[in-house]
Image 1 (tube, one colour):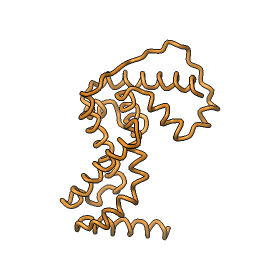
Image 2 (cartoon, rainbow, N blue to C red):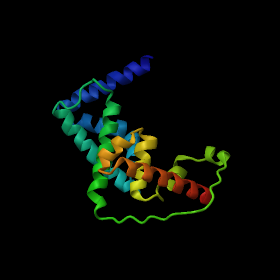
Image 3 (cartoon, rainbow, N blue to C red):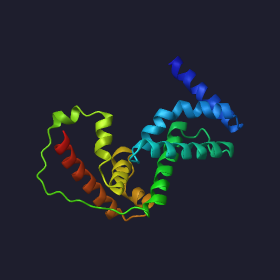
Image 4 (cartoon, rainbow, N blue to C red):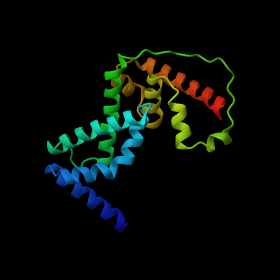
Length: 184
């Protein structure tokens, strides 16, 4: 209990100093949340370099917003940061989506899943599977299954219809099953 209180006081101090513009404390806050933030960003990109780019863009927004009193203690800092990370990843997707084309591959194989194999998956295996999804499928899958957004929220964030969001989620799950069966 005392350790949690110490962590809370430490974090509050970092945020207070960041509000004052302390570069040293900004760096400390960045390092404190780096692993957490990178894990979220990586879900929305195909490479670690792109994830780091999204992470850095997110922290620029965080530091700018903190200085302008955009963060208060009404919600936990980690939740506020998570929202910025996800929105920055979505903005990055929107910015770059016009430069990509979508290739949809439909598989019509029966799907058999060995639930014991699923238990043996690690983070790298899951990322490897997610990296093989088309970008929009991956984005919808992450927002719905991992971050807990509903289809209405996803449709607003990605400027797609709710039914389109549902279709992309269904296709992502189907593709993941096929990839899982093929690779594991």
